[in-house]
Image 1 (cartoon, one colour):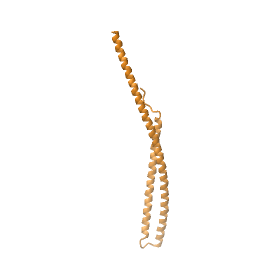
Image 2 (cartoon, helix red, strand yellow):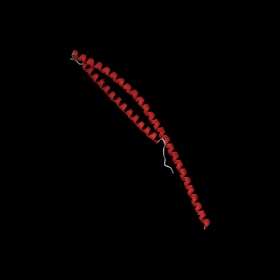
Image 3 (cartoon, helix red, strand yellow):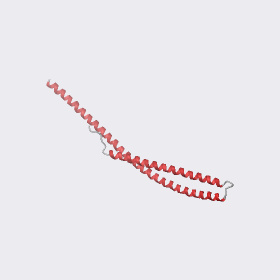
Length: 150
């Protein structure tokens, strides 16, 4: 009986590697988004603290102006970070689609491989049955030939 071989085995391995790469790319983008959101939360918290400081009594006009400038810069930075988050969200969506496509391609090849393996098993069983049948008939023939000679 011949050994099982899948003609597309190297393609399957390539697809598996490609799926892992797409998965790693997606994880990096998700981690980047988490960092941006954490940074955004820090910016907002610092701005809230600055606003709180500006409402206290005894703050001079110069300090109020600095706080106002800081709060405005903080709002611009927040808008910038929100834009970056939106960009990363688009990249994440595209990366998810690429990962899903790579996974789909890999699954298709795995399905083809399992069907080929099942076909090979059935063929091996048929060959084994044929061999067993031929062996039985040869033994029977030898016994009958031996009885007719004796």
